[in-house]
Length: 244
Ligand SMILES: Nc1ncnc2c1ncn2[C@@H]1O[C@H](COP(=O)(O)OP(=O)(O)O)[C@@H](O)[C@H]1O
Ligand SMILES: [Mg+2]
Image 1 (spheres, helix red, strand yellow):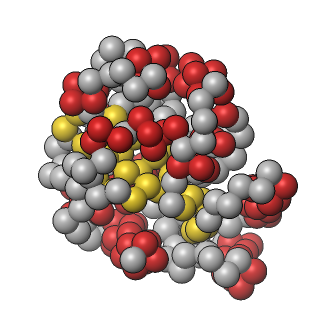
Image 2 (cartoon, rainbow, N blue to C red):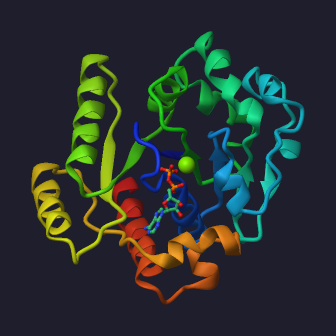
């Protein structure tokens, strides 16, 4: 069971859009995928038409006492299940403070044979939750908008992981890119040269992605021929090769 997290210190950079689309593409490629919505705002759960509710409560889940068969829900996408968020997911941080490394992975132990891949959609923070994410996953996928500020956030993340001696691999990728903007083109170039682990597929800023909130579905379900949808597929292929 491989684990990846869509993670950034910054909000509004496309973590949720990317987690839903990458999870759907991984499922289409034949993987049994679980998408875990860790953000109390529950946008991932919303996109996948799931009630924002953790059956039995978040505390039971963290203690390993929840019935995962009841907490995890099917989605309209074949091979894709979701572990929804709830407002109470904001307690996750405190609950995890008392737990050891990789506890998120521990929580999923009862279902580890049921999934090839788990994708975590994370809230934008540096907290106990994020430290537990760092120790649980095989790699972080970090969406970056091609602006100076996002580049700084990426450097901050790298410095934080170095300082805390957290051996967590992170693979940045560019999203919300607008190639008509000179600054974006320059930044994409600079980032792709400066960050050797940067994934090469660029996700464009596209109205189809915004429509996910209306359609409540991954891009492939309603706009499969758009560049954004194709690029999420290409991005997934790239990630899947790195996982092998
Ligand atoms: N590639 C994209 N093109 C256009 N809009 C996007 C794209 N990715 C995300 N968005 C929009 O930007 C906003 C923030 O995206 P979201 O995935 O929720 O970010 P995060 O989870 O990092 O906070 C949402 O309104 C979403 O629809
Ligand atoms: Mg989000």
